[in-house]
Image (cartoon, rainbow, N blue to C red; front, side, top):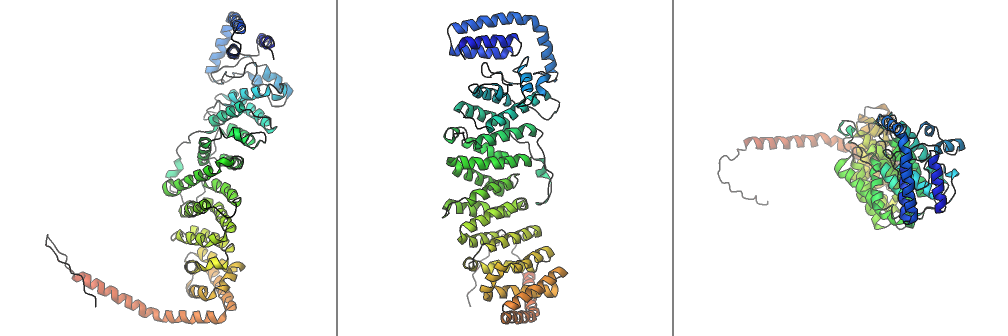
Length: 544
């Protein structure tokens, strides 16, 4: 569009009352900066005439401002609220806006472009400018604590976001200016500080399901996230240019949003982080390191975070794509970040995702199975039956991916722990431990190493058969004893005889322990402590 055409177009628009005085002032500034000669003087003369003409309408303007200050929110007129993207009639009504104020929406829109027009109503050359104008409108953040405040402006912003999503979905060519303005809009809407979590002071259990809290601004946030997802996934987005704006700071702020209490927001962030990881290969090591730091802070400091499950779900997909052989960095991440996640009180919230990540490592490199099992035994819960049941379930999945060679490295402490679980007074723990023998893969490895494993398990089964209070546990115990007898009857009978012999010796052993305690108590009663400041010479006892 030439200079004269731009001038005549702006004049006709103003005479029909379709553009505000603020936009014309911005147009004049942009035009005078590009054409600092006669054209700038011509614009100043034109605006001077407009000010004289607009003085006749000052009362109407004052009444409009006062109605806006009262919270009516009718800044764009009632015709904008019913506008819909892609409807020609609504586009015409959107173009018939009387006035726009910079007190709510910014006036820094591109010269000569009405930001409320649909992309279908402008030429391809003007679409980038219209895109930037709409981004400027969407950069305004509203307060949703009061649903009646700025309701008209909120509807306008929402319709503009819908229009932007449709435009980005069509895969336009993004210039660097468009990428930069998009980054600013995403930052202004998404990057925010969450209020303190009042639920952190409540005394709930680690598996207590708390009711999710939903963000009242989700009607806007959902569209912004959808726009960001379409923007990152667009094939026309040049990653080399975009990485200047999707940098480490952007990724850190994006990861901070995973602590949102709104599950819908965390679900959107999960998809977006996965796309960012796939699109920007240069940022992959930094993303893994930043997620590790979140885990470290959660494990060793706060033990409070809302998005651990979603982060682990993203990592599960990332781990499945690791190349073989695994790098040392990935093995360190398994040992220092994933395995310690088992120790937290809230492990039940993300146990499924954590198990998937761990088993992915074992499937990639089976030699890690013994390391994982020993790490699991290190963090095994001793006083929490619910966590113990979850650990047994994870252990079964790990053992399904473990070969006999790796099992031999850790089978003694492993099956000693399983024997303790078999004798647990909590029937769910004992029942879950007995279910392990229904797994064919586990029983196959037990059969290969039965000379070591069976002597550890048979005494626990004998104690269950004679002492356990739960009938379901008793029935499963008898079934397990039958399976072991079919495997190696002579070995089972030898273990039973040894157990019975130890049981007969048990009273004598207990009597010796009782006498030793009595001797210690007697010696302690005759001991006279040194009083005052008397020096005492202590001589070491001579070895016999």
